[in-house]
Image (tube, rainbow, N blue to C red; front, side, top):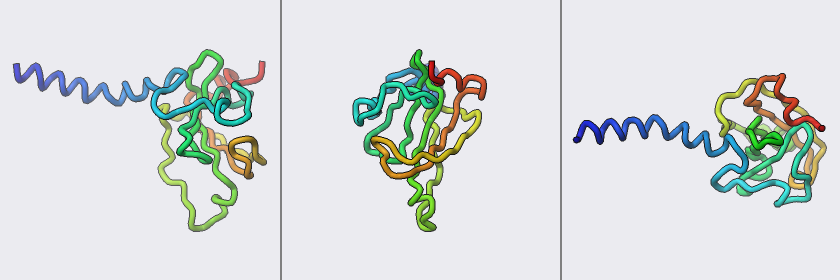
Length: 139
């Protein structure tokens, strides 16, 4: 009996990281994440990024979870203010990728938009191969 209980605990311990990852694999994610289009004046789907969710407490940097039109996670996005990137005393260490494995990373400038009005850099941690980025392209 004790062996079965210990075995069950061991299996659950190994499965918990997978269960946590499953909570963000499909939109809407669980937890404190909110749909960005319900927080600020932005469309539900942004070509090139997809449908975004964020924990409002992490603004402006994020992470933002980005989903395709079928609600599948494609990337994790950080929006890092340029003023913070040029501040020698500011660091962005250990940027988490809630969606798990990162296939590749893109970084580009954005002049600002609702929700993150100041100029910033988008750091996109893609969870899908480069060829699958088209899942968030404009139709």
